[in-house]
Length: 278
Image 1: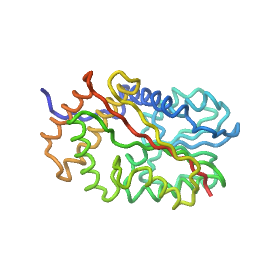
Image 2: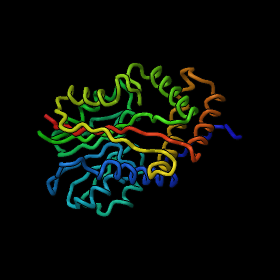
Image 3: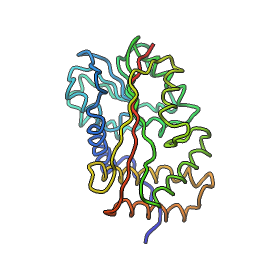
Image 4: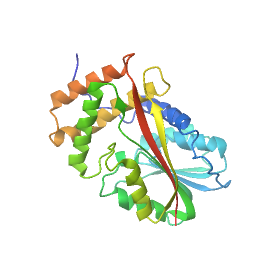
């Protein structure tokens, strides 16, 4: 069995295909690109942070072709892909910015909707609160922020759950306090806390359960996401001394093999919040 870790190419056709599949699964689970009951004005200004190849912007444009949309990402490669997928460059502005390192580029009081997704995977605790405040500043009075985060899965795979434990320990030692995917205090409470500190009122708070078991529509996308996440968090987990390289790699291979068996069962929890800016 080959347990050698191979660096993942984040800017590749393979990764873009994976993100497209993930978007399809999320769109189905969340019943569309916008939360229930939210209807935007015809020419509303929309900001998508870390837009990647523009898949969410594309889905939104199908229902709202006249929206003025801005997508921001740190990858020039993904922005090139976004220009390919988005139907009209006249209504879309794409910017190369890294929200983790700079926020001065954000305008004040411009946007009717700011869309955030899986932000806790990109930002550390010392950056995330300030980032939320700056994104709220970029909103018009009474504008909406739509924020989605996920937790680690619950599965019947012993290797998968052990790997999750290692990842949680690594994140805890590296970041301190809040742990991505933990239920204590939990991503849901953390999101609400940050939004309220920024002056927002949470008007929708929903939990979505994805069945990631073998044979279910979300299974393949989950396995691919798990493969990427184990590679993404590997250096962090090993650097802080949670586990050795050899043990981590062997466990990651075993977990992925168990996820692909016909007996694999699991659920994944997503949390979405819709908040109103002051």
